[in-house]
Each structure stands twice: as structure tokens, then as C-alpha cells.
Length: 259
Image (cartoon, helix red, strand yellow):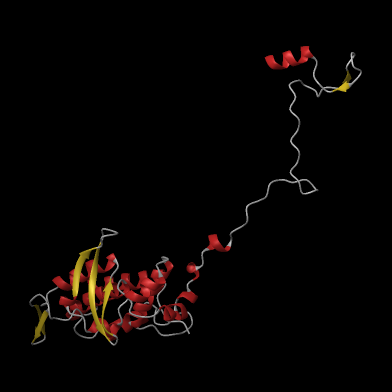
């Protein structure tokens, strides 16, 4: 059984829907939650974290660094989950969502009102609260709740999407497994077998180079003789010796040299 995920087009549809929901939420009282959900979708799709790992993530566990190879900004994340403590390096697309999470004021609610409070502390969670109901409702509204095989999508599908998109970009399977704290066997079993773009058409459709033209005997066709005149010399007999020869007469050879 494959894992339910979002194709590139479906993932784009999802984060565009969460962005619109953050700008114009149905209930203005939950604007902060809608903004958090949008950044949650982008953060998860660019890190591959498990939902339980994201729930325990604190701001002090995340650092913005410059990747020495690509020279792009990425996140270094200290992950704490069911497999203990591990490390994750994000895609560049996770940086801006995290910066919004870091700089977003926490709401202070009371007497039915919501006011802006303080910035998150280093020990505060990145994703406090529960967005699962809002996330599920948004999937239903966008007709993304079920994949084409009828399997329901959940927040875990964002992790599966990250892995599948990395495979589609031909990232190294071993590196993906280490970054997602899983095994190569699991990735090959549940993900790689279902991604058509992992098949290299240039390798599959490779052809042997065409061999040079050969005659029926399997030998290379003989090269035509080179003559300096318009026609091949006719056999002639030496008047002194009586021997037949194909050599050009002296006059013809001199003319050929001039041409």
C-alpha cells in the first residue's frame, strides 16, 4: 500500500487555499489560527517532519543557517520524536514560513476579544493549539480529502509529499532517509515505486550506436580508387617489354599534378 500524498499540482492548490484562508478567514476571531495553518502546511512540506515531531518543536530547536554548497538559507532542526533526537535540514522554502511563525505575536483572548500579545519565547512551541479540524475542513472544501485511490489524507500526508517531491527531483534516497529519520527500505517500499519520474527515460530508451555500413560479406565497403583524371586509366601494353600496365602515361600524370 502506498502512502497518501499531494501531487505537485495538489500541493500548490492546498497552500494557495491556506494562504487565501489566512487573508480572509471565515471567522476573524480565528485569523491567527488560519495564519498558523498556512505556515504549518509550508513548513511541513519543506521539512518532512512527522506531525508528532512538529508538535514538540520549540523555537530554540530551529536555527537559520546558510548552506555552504547552495549558498541558500535553510533551517537546521533538532528533532525530538518517537525515534529519540535527530537532525533535519530543510528546503529553502521553509525559511520564510518559520520567520513568520517566529515574528507573529501570540493572541491574548479574554471576554470574547482577541488582542495581540508578546512574541514567542525560545521555549514556546512553533505550533501551539490544534489545527487538525481546520485542516480537515479545508481539505474537504478543496476536494482534496481523498486521493485517487480513496485513501484519506491527513497532516501526515505532508511528510509523504515532502519525500515524494524529493524523489521526483532525483535526490539521493539514502540522504532522504537520513534526513527523515527512516530507512531506505521504507522509502523504496512505500514511495519510490509509485513515482514515475524516478524512471530515467534516457537510460530506459538507450540505444546502441549504429555500426558502419558493411557489405554483404561483413567487411567494410572498399573505398573507390582515387584517379586524377575524369576516367579510370585503361590497360595498356608497354611497347618495349610487351607487358600490360595500368600506369598513367607521362603526359597524363603531369596534367593530373597540375590540377
